[in-house]
Image (cartoon, rainbow, N blue to C red; front, side, top):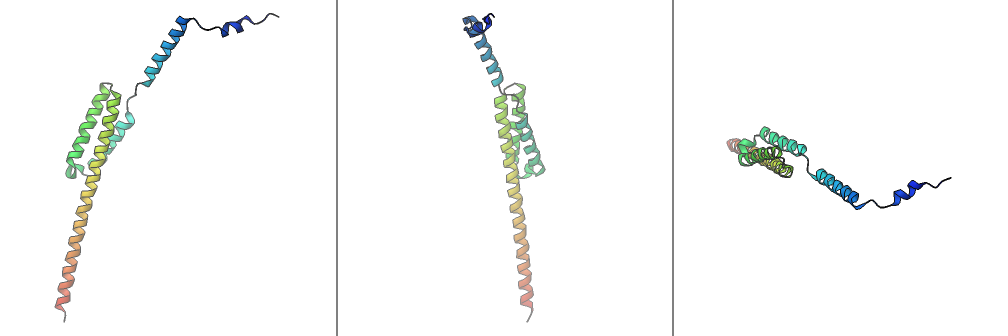
Length: 137
């Protein structure tokens, strides 16, 4: 039997030009894979937060924050069109946070209004009780 001559060939180092070409290809592949894809999840989350804030009537109670969220969301979409995915992701996150802040401020304003209404109702009841208690002998 003849010894397997291909075994020895496999152990020899590759010529330098082939090694450089392989290394360059690997680096190009790594750089291509490292580029950030479009942030659809972040854009959806921002749009959902804006929609939620609008349903909560943030335009009435936190119009500044809602306006900032809308502006940043539009800028995020523009960044996607410009293929600047890092900027798009950042702006989408900022839009979501601004919309969530608008919704939170709206909820706080509504809670304060409800609290004031309860206080007024309580005062009316107290006044009525005092009036009725004072009229009886």
